[in-house]
Image 1 (cartoon, helix red, strand yellow):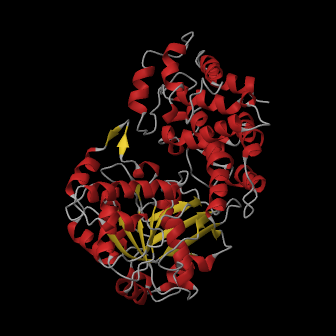
Image 2 (cartoon, rainbow, N blue to C red):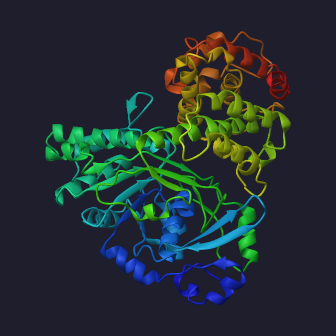
Amino acid sequence: MRLNNTELGNPSPWEKAGIELPHFDRSAMIEATKKGPEWVHFGAGNIFRAFLAALQQDLLDKGMAKTGIIVAAGYDGEIIDLAYRPYDNLSMAVTLKADGTIQKRVIASIAEALRMDKPDDFARLKQIFRSPSLQMVSLTITEKGYDLSRAGEMLPEVKADFLKGPGAELTSYIGRLAGLCYERYQAGKLPVALVSMDNCSHNGDKLFKAVEAFAVQWTETDRADPGFLAYIRNPKQVSFPWTMIDKITPRPDEGVKNMLLEAGCIDMEGQLTSKHTRVAPFVNAEEAQYLVIEDTFPAGPPGLKKLEHGGVFFTDQKTVDQVERMKVCTCLNPLHTALAVFGCLLGYTKISDEMKNPDLVKLVEGIGYKEGLPVVADPGILSPKAFIDQVLQVRFPNPFMPDTPQRIATDTSLKIPIRFGETIKAYLNSKTLKVQDLKLIPLVLAGWIRYLLGVDDTGAAFTVSPDPLYESLAKSLAALHLGQPGPFHEVLAPILSDQRIFAVNLYEAGLGERVEQYFAELMAGPGAVANTLKRHLF
């Protein structure tokens, strides 16, 4: 069985292999989408295929939608060439449930797959953005995708696009998106919702500020019509809803590939793009999933609203903020990062295996229940306590999920301000809680700096996961080595006082010295990481 339109026409072998097929006329869906596109998504990665495209398929299967999704890749266009077009834009979604059962499903809701860096494809995107039927433009481009600068310096591609204007051949991700919005503005100031679905605090505001920066530059320099800035700033014309998305979608797993091959599927091999993105015709993911969206859609409610209460919630901004803070700042993401840092140091390659280590379980339980929950506001639609229970008792221990601490450790410097800094600030602003009571969050921060040395708890070297600040931080730590006695204040002070990394100056917050102390303990020699965890867990 090959994953393409022709072979889907013979359902018998697929059904025998236990693979669920789409229950709608795909040709009619593609034709309807081309004539009246409603949803464009930027970011062709795993969470899009396993979650968002699957949601649209639910609508199509139930006869609740006629159109599919148009997906576009911006950062790594090879994903389209390797994982979409050879398979007629079909994907195999493999859900690995905690009870050991596996759901295999062909996802057929993607009508078109485009590359932003290809002139013909970008011309097609311009045509789509000029369509009155377009309601929603969503994004999963990772947190750093919204950054226009790095280390205080504007990115060169952003600087170049500021000078070009919307009608030129743009190269930056947000510049291209802003240029497409200008097409929509010129087509009659047509309404649209630009929906970030990335895991960053107040993601709608982050996207708005990035797009607005281009609108300001272009209008102030007469490269765009002066009304374009007002259009972007008018929520009745262009909205930027806040969202919270949650579904763990690891990189394509070798074991899952072999399982699909044994089931009779052909051409399931993964590939690596030139930008080191691992892609495959299948995506493996956990069963649990949540999508909470601020209900502000100037072009009309999207079809997703018909799926409310099935893990999809449309609500007000305050509730989205509470759910996002619950998940990203306390109940999941900080626990993931803690396991990532110490998992790499202790030689683990699976998150589920870490959950067999009683000390690591105590660590994440302490961060979640004891240090995190006291500052969580109950959003009402999801229980924070029940959410952590599911994370620690079902999701993280799932032995069938091939998720790795090395994947989670990627871009940690961008994650720390939200995952830990917000809790520290909440303690500082509390009338009842004392920041000095935080013991485990400072331990994770010290563990992260120890991790940056690229030496595990046995003294062996390992590869630090990609991070935009790694080079500069590694340079600052270059003189340190395992077994070196402290004090480390002179080396650590510039790092621990950096509010870009921690959202606060840790010394001013009263935690800098504690992090230094923990770091010294973690540096004592081989075995110091495991010993330090045992010493401070309660």
